[in-house]
Length: 476
Length: 144
Image: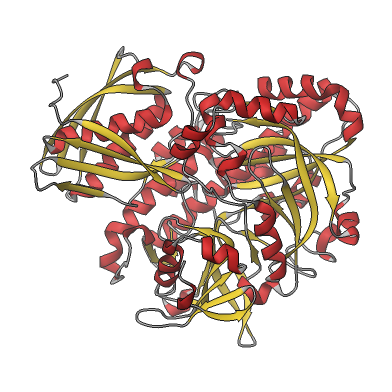
């Protein structure tokens, strides 16, 4: 990216002053090297988002920002319905509420080692992953609607988890305002066989060890110590979410002119929050959030069963569950006044700081865990929301590293078998139904997530707590 | 299925986290068929998919470019709900009206080794156009 187009606020803040159709500035948080490597489309997309009706304060992009659909991936933007603010299906994405949850196991790396291979095989056998896989849970029409309203809470009521789990999930495991009637029959049909499945692409279930503690006090508050084993699950709302994204992107793009919204980019498809399309989308999108939360809850249940059978000493308790493709109604203080805003985070993670009322009692004093997934075979990070993050980008942080090369290029450079063998040589066991999928997800195909997380810390978005390294990875 | 013309071909083009599909043909119909083949090729080797079963698609869309994403998204839906892959397509576009048939078979993970699931066809890099030489191109980015 051409840095001459920015005004530098500090080492980690790059501003685009409003001009033309922009209603607010654009702000990108990153170090100089990340900025130079970022694609030009990020600039263009931040400028486009800044021109949408009802946007407040600024259009933001995180250190891992890259070219997305209308919104950059790593984009954050908040809208005020009283100012004609919009909700955008492109600002949420196709995988609504894709996110990460991390579970403690109570095991150390040394305790896990004798069981590693058996665990890898059992997880691969038991966790439905990859295209063509199906879950074992088939929902009737009534059950589907109950799941879409109830989310993880619905799953726990069905016996797939504990009430303590719900405390450690955004929205306490259940997104209010879901409207199953706003979800099409096609979306529900697409989900019918997919409850409790991992998906494919960059989705995974990973057993990790805590390799390094970067903030002793916060790690202690989170219950994490060096050498501990944790499990992280990265997936989203599956076919239901994808279908909702597809349908509403189309509807909003076609209808935009009716709402007198000129879309600088068709992918920026949006509708006024206070419109039938806007309201219907919100009801459907919140249903998809519940679907993702329920899905990760069911996967947690399956994971607990696997651990019980292979490593009986393990006890899996939830650290936290974050989502990174959502639009949520939140109260933020602007010009000294609290305002209810519709905050879009597209490939960006919520990062509430200490004291936030939405955090559970056990975490309120310290702040929200922010779980940043690395790519297959590379490190992941646990961060924590900060007080200053509110002022930076409505309490938001990055979500992952992003790709450094296309899938096509990765397939040219890497062989799946080779990647699996290399990682096995380093003690990391990969299980996947597709070697081509493994090649596309090769560690070398991704940017360095450490650099992204360090930039997030320097920018005040979140602070580093721990680095995790993979031990076993099941990918679809 | 009608035979393809000599210029019919499909391509992938790179896009960051996702993948671009491009169909080229002597007619718009053929370009749409080729784009669908390109989509299957994202998932698996097309030659591995046998044409055992037929699924028909019919849709209406006045916007010729959204007609492409509608076509591909109809296939995404059929693949997802039937758990099938398709390797042969026959498309007829008559203004806003598209009728098509897709032939394929059930997904067999052991044989097809499907690499990745298509979430949906997007409006990014969306183009349906006639080239100066008279050939047609139909392309878009798929979210995977």
